[in-house]
Image (cartoon, rainbow, N blue to C red; front, side, top):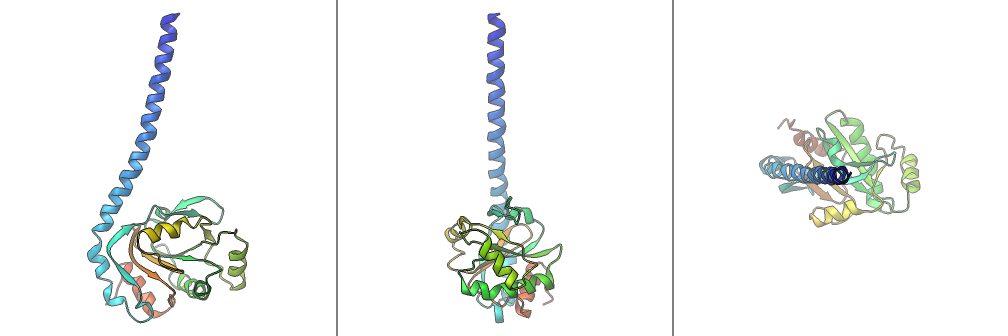
Length: 215
């Protein structure tokens, strides 16, 4: 009986160690994936620099990333309240925008972002607008309805952690904040402040970010 008890205890310990190792391995694997993605983004410096001819006119204030940064780990909520990260959009080039109803320039900019999505949105490109109002979805939902913005769903981060994260990375200094993100989740350009995102200049920049520049 004593042998059986000791064997059972040993089995429990072994199982616990296996589970701990698996969980620890998952975390380690996640860190490894992020680190590898970061290294891959760093290698995109030449591509980011190649966008310089398109930083003009209505998007002249956009700043190219000297060293593109992986932003696939940025977390927020989808319209159904589910947790998502930017990595869920892997394969798409993004104009990734942070906005709030208390931000007048953000409100003024949203219709242009909506038109950009209407004009260019497809399987390879999306305008992804994240609301950072901290008091619930009522005001941003009302604003989107009032402005007849039906093609930009309410993604949100009521904690504002996403803005603070980008501030620490040196790419968010005010509102609105917009990132141009390539299909691998690399931030290749950013802008603090509004722009006419439905302009020909903005569309040319988006095409270049997708690798479809005509000149």
